[in-house]
Image (cartoon, rainbow, N blue to C red; front, side, top):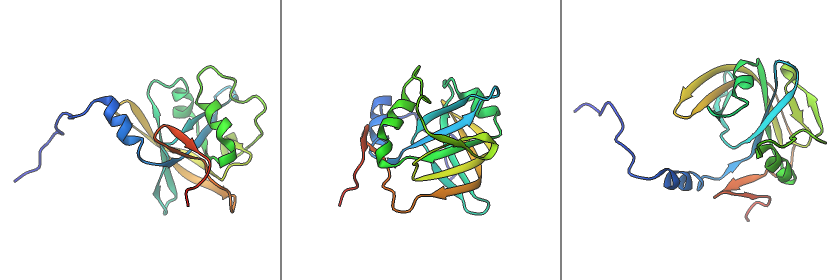
Length: 169
């Protein structure tokens, strides 16, 4: 028997799908880069995952409707900043549209000038290796050129549409 060539239509609504996805607890990141005219950009994302140890690859995804898509698609580098529990306000700010996301934010330049956020649990400095369009998102695969982590840092978590700043016992 040969497998079906196409998936069956979903038996659930988009709201039900989003709710089920929300049951997967994730860390919270801010993905940052520089625009072609040298301005920092960044957004809150929880679609981060490891891909490979050799070579060191990670992935994240961005909505095709995002205003920042052209900058992330054409830039050579970006940074994935894994947020610490005390960076919840930063996660919320970088999730807002139209906000001045960078006002008062402490950062430095990393590989390819990608902004590195001070206080992050970990940072992955990535070469923008490849992109794949799937559904309503673009999947970015980054080749990690440098990474750092802060020993003992407590991560910011996201589950069921809410941030968590304490780990359960």
